Length: 250
Image (cartoon, rainbow, N blue to C red):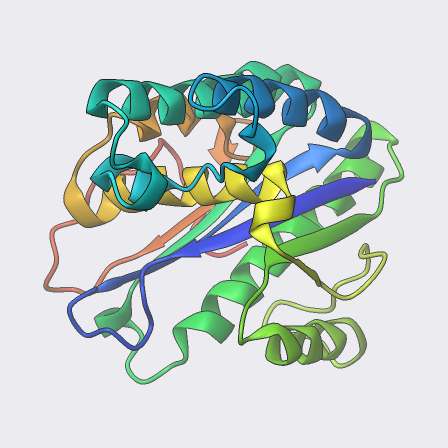
């Protein structure tokens, strides 16, 4: 089974945040323990005795908020970069793949960013699982795991609709269950998804690719086409160049 750990960056309600971004880190079930161990080792740098209680969370780490206030900026940024490298980039050959939907909210013309992004992320992850079956003879199911959210019931309802009634691109056929919601404090892999979402947000909302460039090659791709990254800008916004040959729809 492939587990897609999902987190968001950007606020739907806040008009001062023009982007909403949904990012998923797909991990083959047998790799979750080993990636968690790597992330625990990074947390131990800051609190060896209580590292399990220390949450790796991109925005507070970069800004130095909360427990991160007393930690040097360089150490905080290195921890984010190392987590992305060791948890995603170094694990690419072990079956880790990235998926992201980047939306400039003004480009949606009244559409709900959460539903729009969830539909596209779900479709792309489902297509990834389908491709494993058809092209690589690997019969795998998938499951999406989110940080605890007020959208929990809404997303579970949408997932059922995608399975039984279909979405704009068809019906999902490869999921083992509706999305599961976890407390990010208890899941290092959800924290990794947060760090990835933060890296994508810094790239597209701020033009800062320092963190993004180490994971840019990890988006799901086949035959030179990047299927795992979808970017939608408003017509008035100059596009920040994404990874090469990004698939725009399916």
